[in-house]
Image 1: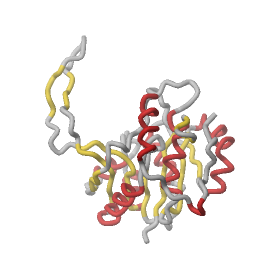
Image 2: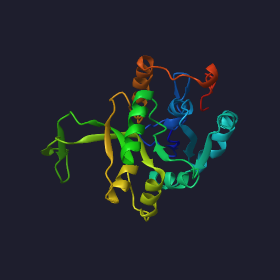
Image 3: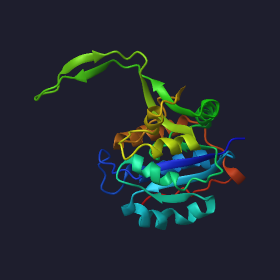
Image 4: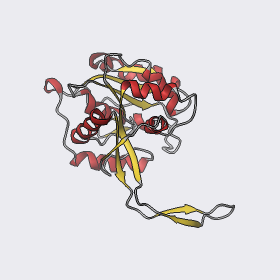
Length: 249
């Protein structure tokens, strides 16, 4: 059975979340911090051997105070992130065990995940070396016209063949390491873009619109309703690894 390490980036600035008390991965959602919902889907899998949470330097002390005991029990590691998302992933890659076959990167602020989607993208990565969850674009797309003043439509964009990238994004460990080694500090909004730059194919695995990323406070309300209809992950040993009051405070 292939083995996986999972990186959960949670070091962003959360500017659009606009909450002075919480960054979005640490906001309370249905009794637990957002990032815990994301982590638990991987912690309960036998093929996942390593989970690494990436946090900002400014959050590390408080994060360890709040979640340190739980993470020690579950074997979750902490990594300090960088200025950009890609910097954070590059730092976390240094902690990935060499014996692991694949690395999965999943947004810590994307809590509405189910095992079937993970199974599908893991299997596609095993087959081709790289795969991401994504959904076909169904809305009509407009590109804003250039120039100052009020926003107006410049053109309607053909949505044919367009997909919206999600996570997890899963790669053979050596392939992702190679992609980051050749990054040379260049910005990247996701990991697949760096693998694409190597000329390697990345499989698109159809996910679900329910696999939302928390960006604003309204997204929290939607995520809470989605979690009510998603199947619950089985807990190892019959107990949930985190107590209901494990919130970022």
